[in-house]
Structures are given as structure tokens and as C-alpha cells.
Image (cartoon, rainbow, N blue to C red; front, side, top):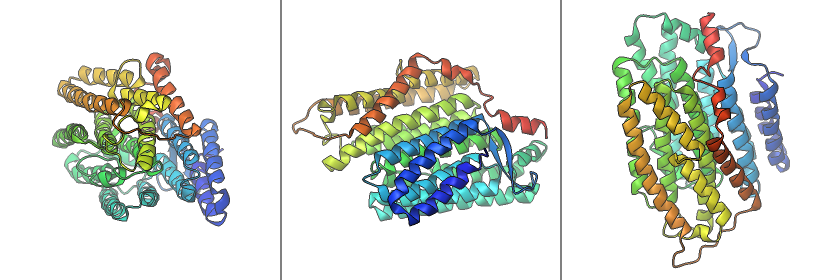
Length: 459
């Protein structure tokens, strides 16, 4: 069974859902489950499309790295669709479009098609954010997304003019054989900025505050969890394999990402609204993930993406559901939220503690390992920055938990459907189990990008 079905089937289903709107949600869930099955039975390797042998033709790259990312993305979309099937059922076709485009982003081995899927994924994201009923914020996101994708395309055009190929693996080979690194700085910078807009990297992410700060139970998890994870995986793929960050460019990127961590945490610290705290925390996490990829800590960056996506799924669902019923996400207005929602409060607390990197949770295991690898690589100053950011993160998250657990002057009554609670419990269980039994995390190492490396070595 070909991996191309992960793109073709959701795309076909998206068109069908326009005609048969009543079955759109069922179609979305069925396609998502079908995708998960394909991911575990499809053969790994480079898949050619149209009969043209790479690097001339279009090809897809399916390896362990892409399998990790695709399982996470498709599973999360299914969960979000099921939880919002009544409130946002008219967005099922858009979610199918998002599924097809994100799968394409994570599979394509062609830089131009990466741009095409980036555009389609962006269109789906803009449509999803219209559910916020804040058209000006969506328009702002659209403009910045268009600028980012244009810069990415400009970088691709420059690389094509230099090497005469768009195939990623072929271009990696040719870049490794070139001696003129200075000419690569401009296209690498443009492409990094283009991907950085969607990956929420400072200073290219001014759209985040307007979109996630006004999000709901559909747009919040989709943008902060699904899209954030997908774009981090894409950015990691190209940082690890294509971009050659050396010398001054490496220093600039490292400093920029370090500032992103500190500024994100500082902005979360000074925020008094729950959604802003979560979104600025996500900004800091995005910078940490990119920093890990830049320093070659691949496997723990992958695990960090997965853990962050699961945690942010729970956090945004809990807060956005409460915000909808209370009418405000100010912490003072949400005070005592968990006093009548003990189970929700416990799962939210576990997800928060995992983000903070507390012991017995997977966040602690991941953070301990990547800090150890950074220290072993003599990047002590990066370790210090992340530890300082972690302290700040711990302070504002503890402050938020205290507010949400202890009763205020007014009683807060928010009803969470049983389906929400099941998802919360399952995610919290995963975070807890992998934090105490980390054997599954030891099955892979930083050579997770095995297929692409094999292809590169064999020419």
C-alpha cells in the first residue's frame, strides 16, 4: 500500500465532504483511521510519483522520522474532530484539507511541492481560525503567512538557480560538495524565516497572540498542537538535513532562538490571561525545539515535539472550554475552576507539570536528556538559558495552578463532556507512564533520519 494515499485520500474526501455535508465528520474520522493503518503497513523508503526517476520526478520520503510525525498529526486531528463534531461540524472538510496538506508537508522530498503544501496548509489554517470570529486577526495571520511562504519560495528559487534541482536529497548531495558556503547564507536565511513564521519562532510570529489569544476548542488545539507540531517537524527535517548553519549564521540563529526562549517565557510570566500564558509558553517551546535541531539533538527534539503537542492539546481544550462558558480567560475569573472538576484538574495539572519538566513525567525525562547532551557538547550557556527559562516557566505555571484550584469569591461551574475527560485521562496516562517507564524512548537515537542519510550516502 503506497504512502501517497495519505495525501490523495484526505484530499478526495475533502471534495466529497463539500457535496455530502452530513457525513463529513464521519468521513474525516474514517480517513484519519485509514491513514493510521497505512502508516504502519506501508513500506519505508523513497516513493516516486509519475514514473520519473528522482531527482527529475516528484518523490516522497517515508522514514522513521516522518512516521513519528504523521502518526501524531493524524491521531490528534481525529481526536480534535471527535471532540468538536457538534460545535464545529461544518469545519470537517477544512480539517480533511489540513490533514492532506500536513501529510504532504511531512512526506514531500521536493522543495517546490513543500511550498505548495505549505500554501494549502496555510489556507486550511486561515479557515480554521475564522471559527474565532475575529476576522482582523485571521487577516493578520494570512498576511504574515503569505509573506513567510513568499520568502521561503524566494530562497528555493535561489537554490534552484545555484544547483539546478528541487529534489531535497539531490540538493543535499550538491550542497555538501560545494565550497562556496557564503552564497548559501541568503537562501538558507529566507527559507528559515519562511518556515519560522508558521513554527511560531520569534520575531516572525506576531500573528500568534491574535489567533491563539482568541482561540476556541477547535482552533486552539489545531494551531497550538497539530500545526505547531507539524511545522516543528518540517523545520527539524530541513535544519538537520539541508540547512548548513555555520560560522556567523549559526551564531545569529542560536542567539535569535535563545532570545525567543527568554522573551516567550518573560511574556508568559507577565500575562494574567490563561490563553496568553499558554501561547507564549508555546512560543518558548518552539524556540527550544529549533535550538535542539540546530545542535543535532534530533531524537529528544522529536520527543519534545510529541510531548508538547499532547500537553498543549489538554491545556488549550481545558482553558478554551472554560473560557467559552465563563466568557473570560482572565485567571481571576477562572479561579476555582478545578474545585468542581477534580478529574479535569488532575489531568491539567499533570500536563502542566510535564511541560515544566517535573519528575515522574515524560517532560522531565526529555528535558534531562537534551540538557545532558547540550552539556556534553560544551553548550553550557544554552543549558543555563534553558534552566533559567524553566524556573520562570515554573513560577507562572504554579501561579496559574494555584488560581485554578483554589476557590474564589464566585462559584465556577464548567461542564466537560465525558469524551473530553477520556482524552484528558489518556494523555495524562501517556505523560505519566513514559515518565516512569522510559524504555520505549530508548529504542531510537539521534540517527532517526536513517532513510534520507542512507540515500545521501549512496548518492
